Amino acid sequence: MYSDKLTFSIGTERFTARLRRDLAPRSCDYLVGLFPYKGQVIHARWSGEALWAPLADTFPADLVLAWESATADPVPGQVLLYAGERSVPELYIPYGVNRFACKHGPLEGNHVLSIEGGSQRLAELGSEVLWTGAKKLRIEVSI
Image (cartoon, rainbow, N blue to C red; front, side, top):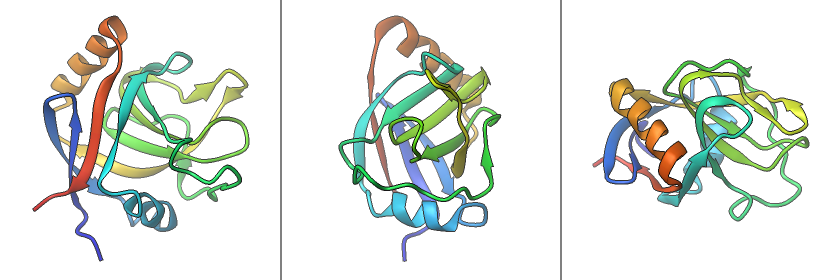
């Protein structure tokens, strides 16, 4: 069993995050199976002040995760996992005013991680990604 404390890195910035097994146990278990996760974040073009990490390369094409405390209105630092029929699988990382959506309309995702502290720096990173492009993302168990 993995620890619920994680290191969540965007570019060279490191944050502490916590798995939210209390809200989305099956989704968290699936996410843990991807660790250590390495990918990229890009700006969420449909959703306002948020980043997203496409997961299509790591998810089976037909996998649909059931809703577990799903939301379309996360607050900054509440990371959502989406794997449904309306869009590609993704991690959604809000850093400001947002509403989770895709080109087909509103989405809801399962709250799988909470980034603890660093909301100002997360907002600055969001702006950097908007203006300069993708950054590396890494999620791993804290030691």
